[in-house]
Image (cartoon, rainbow, N blue to C red; front, side, top):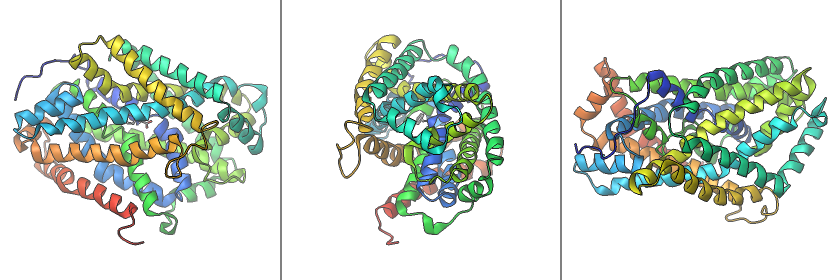
Amino acid sequence: MTEPRFLHAQWSSRMAFIFAASGSAIGLGNIWKFPYLAGDNGGGAFVLVYLLCVIAIGIPIMIAETLLGRRGRQSPINTMASLAEAAKASPHWRYAGWLGVIAGFLILSYYSVIAGWAMAYILKINSALFAGIDAAGSARLFETFKSTPEYQVIWHSLFMAATIFIVSRGVSGGLERATRYMMPALLLMLLVLDVYAMNSGGFAQGCAFLLEPDFNKITGAGILAAMGQAFFSLGLGMGSIMVYGSYLPAHVSITRSSILVASADTLVALMAGLAIFPLVFANGLSPTMGPGLIFETLPIAFGQLSGGGWFGMLFFTLVFFAAITSSVALIEPAVAWLSENRGLSRSRASLYSGSACWLLGLGTAFSFNIGSELKWFGKTVFELVDLLTAEIMLPLGGVLVALFAGWILSREHSEAELEMKDARHYRIWRILVRYIAPAGVLIVFLDAMGLFGR
Ligand code: PHE
């Protein structure tokens, strides 16, 4: 193998990698997106397909992506290029790296707008407006907020500025330390909300909605949404896990770390779902509320709990932290590439890519108000960017990673990198990345295009 041109610093320990990878995985995808997608796509059947995708497609690809990162030890584009060269494969593999950089970029553009909502709610939620609020009141407040372009731009700008600030300071340090406390705190907070939901009067109905699969309620498009969500939530298929893998010391078990990260990610999503749907049913709301779901339902709980305002502030602060650790991962492949290949300093690389992302994000910020009539194929800018990335680019990027790790990288290399104690485990992983994951993604794509005529 050719020597990598740039040797990165390595993570201080296995735990540091795990926290960083969970930081990338756990974010708005778990708390904001998973519940509303589940709500829009019929609940239980969506959740079941989602879980299957995490296990059969997501985890094997996460292992593959981390492994490629650790072997390549460079930005995703350079990693793909140098590993392809070493394996005497086509240099075109580097386009898989490009696909990831672009996907991360597009995702961050809207991610920042939604994270801005969470930031705004940190301040709003403890105000008199929310005290004792009912469902209609909460919906009204959210609606006003969403349809005011100035608010959207201000919060989007603040969030992007925060991302640029953190990314320009480098990979280790503050962020690594912060996730250590933020993630457990978020989990605890969700637990409290779950307990509140249990007593809300809608718990049985909420659980049934989320956990009892009814396959009549899910369509091909819903199955595609579930698969896309698995990629999105695990943070796969766009190179960020590859970047983190590139900082991972040798001999740390990639398999165990990946399973741990995926389990934590799934747990947070399910806990968020269990907090939200009981509230939906207890308040006579519809689960198909779309992207506003958590912002319309959770404030009802905060408004009615005593001390709920403070509690809500803490909750949205933690959501903000979860979002920022993901946004950093989303922009990292672009920043790593700019600093490796264009010789830019990290701060310049972050500033340029963050600003470009901000500009693009205005499209999403306005898609909830003055630009809501601007549609292609019946979709607003936000919907279009979201579908293009989560449902097409990430699965495609993930499949390319799987194919590369399964077919291009030599067996010796992947076996040496994974160091699995049990040879059977290695064989299972290899079958999953060579056949099952690519075929699974293909079938879901074809099904969504209506090729199986359901
Ligand atoms: N996984 C993050 C979330 O759930 C989003 C993300 C997607 C992060 C892709 C990195 C890469 O919010």
